[in-house]
Image (cartoon, rainbow, N blue to C red):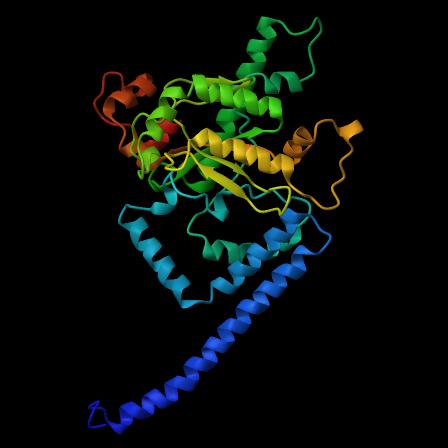
Length: 362
């Protein structure tokens, strides 16, 4: 006590805390070991890999919400959102679990997902809604309709495309109403469009589109190392409505991610950020993803080469590659007035007032 200048009370505190620390360390080690054993057990079950992964993910979520660090993280996120710098609504950065396709295991875990939905919403800082009612395409809807007598003519095609455009506008208005977007509430949000690539031929078409239609934007993104370039408001967005085969990509959106919701081998998501890389070009990472899908070792795979055709096409039809295009409010707010005028001349003609984000998206 004389050497360390401590009192008997301080020594008693140390003596009491030492076994407590050892006990908590043992509990933490046992918990981690138990978690690992549970994961091994679930992965060995003869069930779809993506369904097993979803169960593991929701289980981790349920355990996470009772931790102190989770409460501090939610408080920090809410403070940033209130101060106007909501990181969760940026275009750049890794895709969160809430932003992936919420219907990837539809028909397998529907009941379980519905029961655990309040827990998932409690952890998430985002409120996400995915809708398939916005088929933003050129020829898809026309081909899916029954042809009129005499076949398709230009007049019939124009009428069908006009009807499809009205359906898209109506679905968007309903989406805005359900989520209270725009108007008095003025909620901060971002809009995502996923382009599904379900065959090797479609992948080659998309790569050709990258090299030609999106060449300037991709070169600009690749030149900005260590920068959230898709949130800077310049040189990343599509300047005109652009088609990839028969799918129309709307102007103003920027390519942010290439991802697979559920990889064939383990059911886990795989994502590639569209940004500058120190150790290689962006296309190299995409080719690596395609190779991983093709060479994946999948147990009990019901594939027949004679009946199902090429293995890569068969797997992509079940685990498609998605190209994600994003338009965030942060990007729009930092966009120059000249770019806004070029994208929306009907809103900015004869006025100097900047349209709201919702008006811009409309």
